[in-house]
Amino acid sequence: MHDLGGSLIAWGLLLVVLPLAIGTYLLGKHAKLSREWTRRKAEVVSERWSSVGMSDGTGSALKAVTIRWVDDVGREHFFTNPIQHSGAGFLKRVPYPVDVYVDPANPNRGILARGIGSYRGLGALVLALPTLVVLVVGYLIL
Image (cartoon, rainbow, N blue to C red; front, side, top):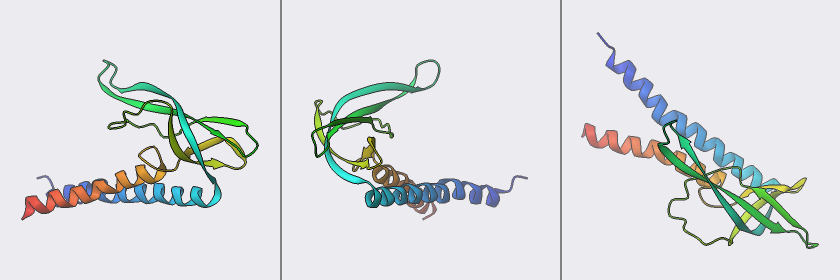
């Protein structure tokens, strides 16, 4: 007979503990960048969509944004945000302003400071999953 209790514990670990660990890691990474990198005003200058998913073309589209910022002496720097996202709800006309963190050692390396394309936004999204699981399980049990 199948051990239902063991399966529930395994699913609980997978759906609660793993997202908590990943979300906490991402939020910690955001906190470190906010201390060590420089926050700047910038603008998204291009968006590139790519398809991810199944070989038959089904799946979802992810958006990679290229960002431009200008340093204190007027030099332009460009980088592609390392976190791609679906961009759902973000129908902005390019270019549009954003806040970024820039690596002082490499001004062509940076990341969005806010939103789903940032470590903070992605971490918060991942942390929301365990809350949803607990609410759904609680509702089903009661």
